[in-house]
Length: 353
Image (cartoon, rainbow, N blue to C red; front, top):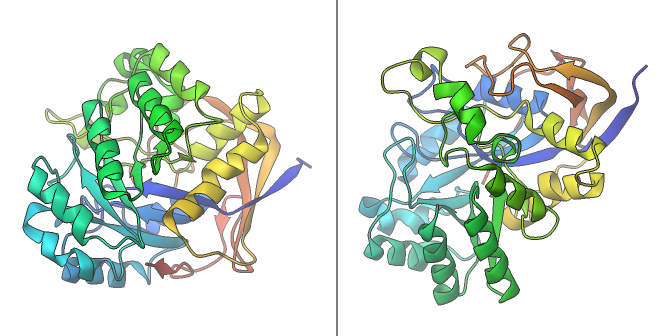
């Protein structure tokens, strides 16, 4: 029998569940099944849907649609939009955090004017975080806003040496900033992007080996969270003349990071901090009593399309040999997943806010 390691239920603070409007890519049932299969008992969903989650009505409808379908706990970001900044106080009642897109993204949300940024920082509750998609010089903008408004800012999917070094300097200066990195930015480079073609295209784009090395150098210090940025698209969409950016990641994140633990690249305690403790603290997420996962720490496996729970059915890590497959998931004392099989019905998760 393989040795099973008991870990707390993991938290992914950056997923795209594609509801509403993109259900051909993913839906609440398939996305949360992928989360559970990857060891995540809480995930946060991004707002760049169709329509985007920028009004109380859309947020309420999305929450209602989610509850009967989900297998893990799910919270929802709300999006910053120039036309809806006055509605931010109402959105804060049920949204877990505000997401501001400063750079190119998949979907209709992007903020490129100063009045909207001011309104977001003034109108969004200080009780819940502001997260930013910021690349390059936009990271400096986010740090400046954190300093000017004296409130925390969380940076999503940091991927470049200059960015992580700037965040390290901001932290050293005592500014209230945190950041996340993705497994695909830790384990893939622009060489892999050339090999994978459109199936390796995401935002931020894959970077150089020097950038990857910088992320690993800061993994035990500057970086606060590992987040998947799970962003599924169908194979047909990725192979089209206008392929959208994004890759799935919920089912490979823990095995990738656990394989790094086995290789001595980080400690198990640090993995737990990056994938459970820090995400809960930074985003003020509720505890899940009697919740844990069991991970097979001995048996290696090759990533394949067979058995993937995500509706898109592919991964940029196909054929990679990893260790750390999730064997069992228990949520609030109830078994959800055992040895590849779901043993609980949809709706066993909760919508949080």
